Length: 298
Ligand code: HMG
Ligand code: MG
Image (cartoon, rainbow, N blue to C red; front, side):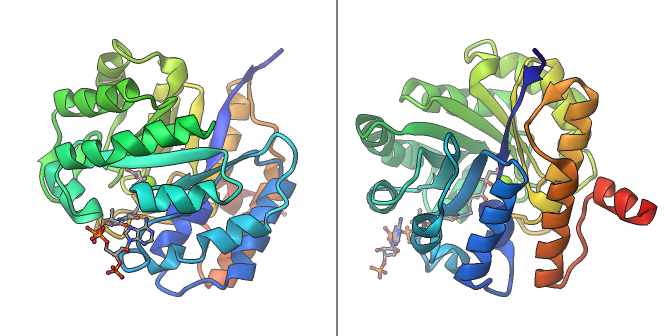
């Protein structure tokens, strides 16, 4: 049997949180249904964050409640605090995704608190999510660089990742928030992080600002990771990481994985159609090389 990768589609959250125009709720629901139709089974569908901070995610409960997720699908949602957890637990969310950063300034800009205070705020959230029988993912942002502070020391990332793991996160998602990382940096970082956390419990979440996304995914696979985040058509960015582009495109990751003998269960052509549809809806061009190549060919 071929090796399997857990591909987590984050476009409906990381992608749409950064759109200047608010996409209607029914279009978000349609996007997720189409992604399910293309074989996506792990999807970050929204964020229970403050609507004052990220208004684009204010309808996350309505989106998630309307999903008729296929069997064995996993719906993830971002949760910053106990208020967000309460809403998430009232919805059909399998995995609670808490988040903090390895950079003080980014933590302050993104969550209005220091790293230490953020970790303290997340501790009861993780505990309560586990008590409620949910899986918990813990994001660490700025794993290589910070849009405000520049280079981030590996030791800072290791410390935050280990804290999240120790408080009970089932998976640690390492976020190259502003897409500055290169393979040698990812390799060095993963060697350090996997000294304390098994590779099987680490996900890689890269943005593609410098075009290094796929190379960084490949490096992560070589180091044993089997959980990879991507965003259909490369949608997205982070409202608190100025200049950062979207995640690495799911279409490109699927193409890469299939060539490496790794399965995802995703129908690449169907996925390209979803990416083209959402980009037409948003009035933009997919930032997927595979999508561009296939559409030129046909
Ligand atoms: P704050 O202003 O310090 O919090 O924000 P607060 O407790 O003082 O609350 C302020 C107001 O928000 C209050 O309303 C609260 O009720 C409300 P008011 O009394 O003024 O009417 N509020 C909430 N409402 C709904 N749901 C909630 C919630 N919490 C408070 N959960 C807070 C602190 C953390 C809440 C805020 O900073 C926040 O929501 N930040 C989220 C920012 C965000 O979503 N960023 C993007 C996602 S992270 C990312 O993209 C990186 C990632 O992709 C990985 C990577 O790429 O590296 C994950
Ligand atoms: Mg992100």
